[in-house]
Image 1 (cartoon, rainbow, N blue to C red):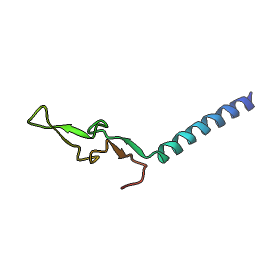
Image 2: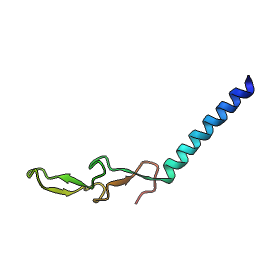
Image 3: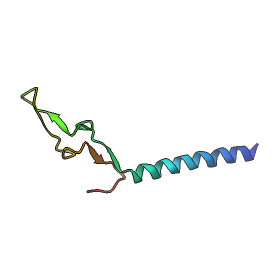
Length: 69
């Protein structure tokens, strides 16, 4: 009984560590301001778009634990 619980804890720990490592390694996340499109609708003209100032038209930004550019 104790051995099966230990195995479950170790498997769970493995998946948590894998997730954290993958999150840090893949440091880009979708830009929350433009939702990944890279452009924002213009304020006054509905058919016009402007570059997103947060991501610089890339659609992705570094998340909290990623490298800072």
